[in-house]
Length: 175
Length: 145
Image (cartoon, each protein chain N blue to C red):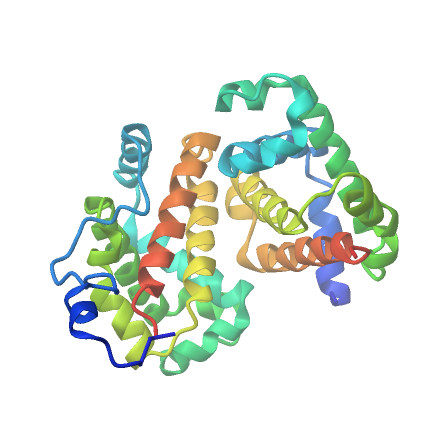
């Protein structure tokens, strides 16, 4: 709670509160090792963004049906096949996964990278940030189905860390 | 919790699952992906690297045991709380396991099933299993106090 009592002149010269930095600092909260970055990049190189993105979003809508309320404008979401075949779901899934591609290029500053998207999802789209974590888990499952050999425990650990970090970054500007 | 069709889909699919392999892999991956869970298994010996974890015979044996209990639970989908009552008390009173870990293991199990069965692990089947693992996690937490 902010201290609202009037401050003496001496006190006023002393900074009681953390200085609010205006420049963007690198995200020091999540650190990816060289091995983790390499593993993530190696799998990413094989990912078909349209297929994996579309399927991840579709699985979110099927496994957690309440998420469909965020996509009322997408038309037919009445069955598994309708959702899997829905062109708007595929297109939006591709868009979401492309932003993951951007995350992979900026793994040392995810909060900065996702600042605008975070504000958008809070202020305009009103998305519960829990859904970012759920979608991250769907991406992992789709990667597991498509890349059974490459998706080793270490690969899973690295990607789980990435999806959690992206979810946190997307929630960062919420208020 | 599950409709008759969902139950049939789950038990039908489960017939194809290699419980020993999947159980071992699920527990191993839990310990690798969420390393703090290793604290429950300090007496298992070498857990120092992912390869050590995945090859550890005690991890494999315990993973099989966990999934055998899960398999048994699938026969009682209408009364998971009853089916897991004793295990719930054990995990609370003797093992002191944070129930959040049951959810994590459930999610890892879903990933392992996806990895082993690829496209056969359809979104609807995934939805059904997600309901089951959530139900089992809740049942295991039910006797906590």
